[in-house]
Image (cartoon, rainbow, N blue to C red):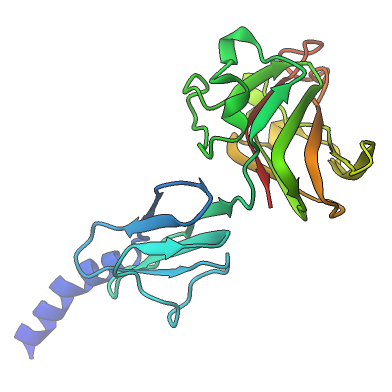
Length: 262
């Protein structure tokens, strides 16, 4: 009896410690965040005996969700959410990545407001190259504007009928980068006149002190569907930095890296 009692005491602390340990989130690696045909997604978690559960609809994975065992080939816009699990540990926090499929790619783009020379990237091409900008603002994928209202025209070789336009931007108030205040979309009708198709605007006060950096900030704009060869995007910047910001009174930066037509 004494021998069994001693063995139990030696094993119990290690077992309890393991059961109190939270696993780290798994890694989600996509070959392309924006895509035209499909995107391949890989999940990884380096712990023997662990499994990664996932969903592609944005819901939280549960025990009867699929278990990852091979790369995922996704042909529609999806939000991949993954959780790592192990029988001896507490499940980790979920990781999530949003993937966005483009329906149409413009044949040409004309920027009516030019980006700052520090963040000119690849020029207007950066808005339709299906390349997601990262945390390095000099990676060539971001266009940075300071205080300007950004206007751009997108031209297609033949009329397209879009239901939604997604504008990819970012927010990092500590670096003086704020989200836009308003976005308007216009389309040229077959008669040659411009028609307002839809807009997005902030409906709440932006409390910059409560915002962390977000380099994957997507503004989804439902628009009136009309066949059009030309679309015009008008992005109104946040304006001047608020009075309680270290840069108070200076114009906020606005960054864009992609405009997706669906």
